[in-house]
Image (tube, rainbow, N blue to C red; front, side, top):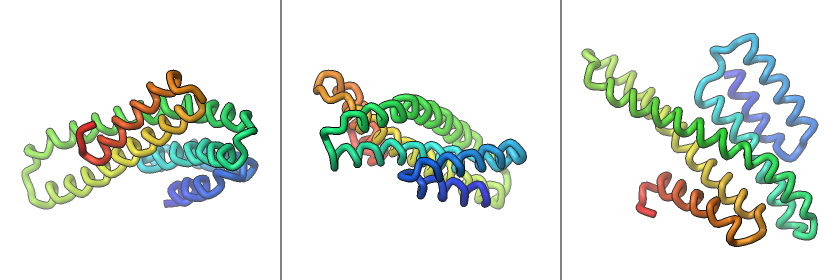
Length: 169
């Protein structure tokens, strides 16, 4: 719970770089001393907080489109983050698939109920990763400033948003 509170504070500090860095150090310290606190939900929360830093730069650029440095700084955050989010999405979706395969082997109703609850939490976390990966790719496309360079990111964003919504793209 403490780690989740830190992750929420980190998201709230997205537009305050010194506070963000201070909180990030505190979370890293907490996770070093208590690795069990690093749940999939917390890991996604940390990625979400990083996303919000990039999004804040995009928002600032929208307010002042002459400041191209904002786009460059956003791309510096969002580029590596997109890769991290995609990897986390692959990992979580693999875990969801594996958990679903093991559901039939559960013998008791209590075990099945507990597994169902855990599966729902994991599916929600995986959907959250897909959502933020889509936005990350979209904003990364915006940073490109030319249609041909942005197209792969916009295409990926569209596909990810369709996945979240459960519609064909």
